[in-house]
Image (cartoon, rainbow, N blue to C red; front, side, top):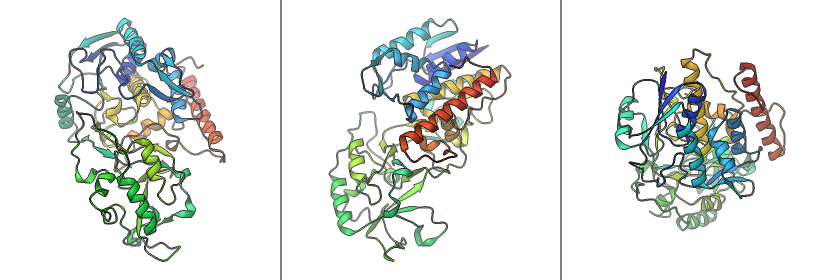
Length: 437
């Protein structure tokens, strides 16, 4: 039985490899070398375009945990990364050309994979995994958008998401505007002098230079906060930082300005900085946003970003196997699903590939433990309770808390990681699907 995989990025090569290991004949469609997106320059597969770092190798980090899980599922990209790694301390940095060459060679030499150098512009028929990434070609993107009923986004800017552990709860208060509804928002109140200092640093902070293919014109609702601030010193106080209706119960007064934090997940481990879409460089985000009262020690799980990014409203469209709802043979994988990051994209390709293979073989549905990072990412992109879906990378805030709290962060994260990896091993062992290391 033949299966189509569209796109030979990190998600595509993992999906094709997983299907091939399961004995399927795979047609892998890739428009290189005949055509490249504006971000790509190399002919090889799984090209890394923004960085050569695949983040931390430490088991106590979300990135390290994810890579360990992927190795349990015979990840092509993680194996290639270790074979192509370059010195980078605790991070897994790679020679990006060697990394691509190793993966390209294995894909092209796999007897179960046929590489077809052709651009796909229409929505495919048959058993297919679409892995075309955030710069999906215009014609295919339009056809996907039509097929999805409009649930496809061209996304300009996003606000940062931070860890709840890093918020100084003594400096904030919970309230909703005019006390309407539950007090679900965290409010970070500014005095006038604090606001003035913050404002000056914000408007003078360094931003990321946009690439030519990225649209510098943004919708008003996605306006970067530093751009909005430059309209005038009170622009934020009448916008996302307006204090109206947010009396501080500690002072019984209205603050001069206020930053609100909104819950990002049901377990209350992640918060979004409301209205803080930004194009500031990452170090500048850390420096300037740490000036917000209560966020002196803030820890980002996702920095604010601004770029062109094509992605699905996945919670409305995909299940936790990355399968298109109301279909039985169309899957998506990679950044188009709303997972953010190289390894996250690759991991989604493994899940989609195995899920489709098991479905075609009549096996029981693949259900990853929610304590594993791969399972948490699959649950995130399919969580119907998320009303304002935004891309997300691997982070510890996606995982259930421990039954017995551990105070030290590194020790806590290591315990969470070992729990998830152990649960994934047990699942694989019990299903007799892989040799568990």
